[in-house]
Length: 182
Image 1 (cartoon, one colour):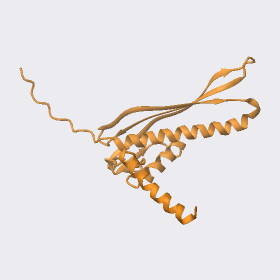
Image 2: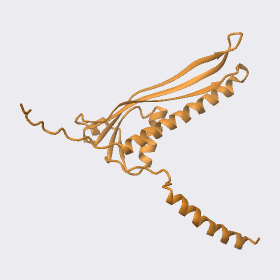
Image 3: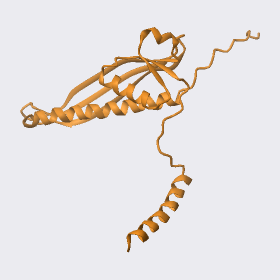
Image 4: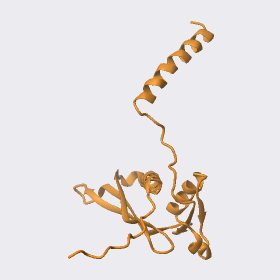
């Protein structure tokens, strides 16, 4: 089959496939519409998680990320990273008592609030864990693999935070309570 004819046929085949995918509700993952325009980053910008989170936030093109404490009260919301904990737990030993399997854990606690104290997202803890086999003869390569696994878990958590930020709703103003009826 000639190249022009093949590209013509593949073009015609792509149209029904696109129609089927759009009819089933398929949609590429996109950046959400955030209910705020400015965000004060109350977390360590120099930490690996802070660097990646800031990059994702700025990458949306819809949010201004401020880090100057003088601007905190002017921001629409404040994102507090309350804790970031990396753990390495031994879960398997051989007969000689040498480590054979590790479990890597990453936990991040955060909340979203406004400068006046209204809570947009209550304190949330996100956790990831992965298993890693370990061999002392390949300790250097396992160290590199461990760094890659932590980076992967960190990316997953940053994406979860971004999805939560995109889905957050502005907190309702407290409605005045009516007098209780007897």
